[in-house]
Image (cartoon, rainbow, N blue to C red; front, side, top):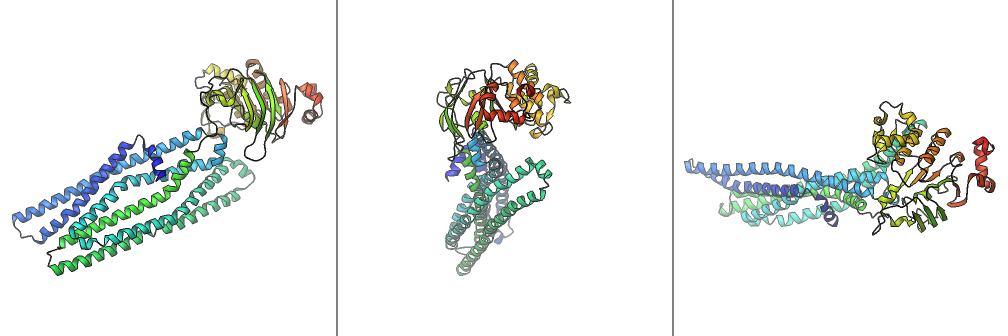
Length: 586
C-alpha cells in the first residue's frame, strides 16, 4: 500500500481520465446489475403470458429496459476502456520521465550502485508492468467490488437462505488468492533482478561486437546469454504454474456454489409451490452468481498483475528515491572567478577499501598548463575528476577559483570545467548538433574556430555535408582520432575556465597532437589546462609536469627540471624516444 500511495503522484495530469474511467465503470456495473434485476420480472411475465395486449406490453417493457441497460453497459464499458488506456499511458509516461530526470542528477557512485542495465530495465520492463497493472486497476478498482457487493445484496434480497452460500465461498476464494500471491511474489523478485543481467549481457555483446567477432567468441556469448535466458524462463514458468491455479480453483468454487444455490432454491420452489421463490428468481440468482464469479475472476487477474507489478514498483521507487550523494549546497556560489585549482591534503577512495588518492597537496595558478604522467592505475583521472566534482573527496579540500568545489552550484562549476576523456561519446545527429552540446547558441564562426584549434577542419572538409554530416549512433562512422578531435572542439565551445584533456589525443598522431596543443596555447592562454597523457611528448611543453604513482604526486617540475631530478621521468622519456636526447625527440 505504501508503494501504491507513493506512485499516485505520477498520475498528475491524468486524474481527469482516471476519474472518468471510474465513473464510466460504475455506470457500466450499475447497468449490468439492473439487467439481472429486471430479468426475473421478464421471465415471470413470459411464464404467465396470456396473449392479452397488456401482458405483451409488459413483456416488451421489460425487454426494452433490459436492452437499454445492456446498451448503456456496453457504451460506458467502451468509454471506460478508452479513458483507462489514456490514464495508464500517461501514468507510465510520467514514471519514465521522473526516473530519467532523476538519473540525470545521479553521481557516478549512484550509477555504479544500480548499473546501466538495471536502470534500463527499470525504465522499460518495470514501468510497462506497472502501467499494465494500473490500467487493470482503473477498470477493476470500482467494477469488481461494486458489482460483487451489488450482486451479493440482490441475492439476499431475492432469497437470503441461498445467498448464505456466498459467506463461505468468498472468504475461501480470497484466502486462496492471497496464498498463491505470497508464494509467487518471491519468484518474480528473482526474475526481474535477472532481467538486469540479461540486458547487461546484450549491452556488452552489442557494444563489444567487434571484439567478439575478432576473437571468434560468438558461441561463448550465445551460451552466456542462453544461460540467463533459460534461468528466467524456468522461474517464470514456475511462477506462472502457481498463478495458473487461480482459474481452475475459481471455476470449481463458483460452479460448486451455483450447484449449492440451485439445490437450495429448487427445494424451496417445490416445497412452497413458488410462493417464496419462483423460477425467475432462481434464474436471477444464477445470473448474480455469475456476476460474483466474474468479479472474483477480475480480482484474480488484477491480483496477478499486482503480483508482477509489485516488485517492479519497488524497483522503480528504489531508483526514483535514491538520494544523489552529490548535490547543490544551500546558497551556492554561482560564478567561478578564475581557473585557479588547489588540492589541500586530498584523500579519496571509491569505497570503504583502500584510498586511491593519498594526501595530494598542490596548487595551480589560473592559466597554467599542467601535464600529468603516470602508469595505469596511478589515479590520474580520479584526481582531475574531483575538479568538476564528479566525485567528492573523503578528506581534504578541492578548491577552484579560491572556493571549495562543494560551495558552488553544480551547473555553474561544470559549465566552467570542460572534460575530454580518452573514450568520448558522440550522439546520433549531425556534427553541428554534437558540437553545440558545448554551446547551444554557438554561431558557425565560433564552431569553425573551435574546429580549427582541435584540428577538426582538415577532415571536416572531406565530409559529404560538412557540419551537417550525420553522426551514427556512438560515432561509429568516424575514426577514433576524429571522434577525439570533435570532442575537444565541443569542449572548447563551452568557453571553460578549466580544460581537462584526459589522454584525449591518444588516437591522434604526434603531429596532430602538437598542433592541438599549440592552438590551445595560442588562442586560449587564459584557460587552465590539465593534460593527462601516456606520451611524454604530449606534456613536455607544459608549465609544470606532475609524475604520479599509486595515488600520489611524486614529483613536479618542468621538462628540463625533471630530466635532471627525476629518474622515473627520465627513464620514461628515454624509453619512449629510444634513448635519444631532448632535442632529437623534439
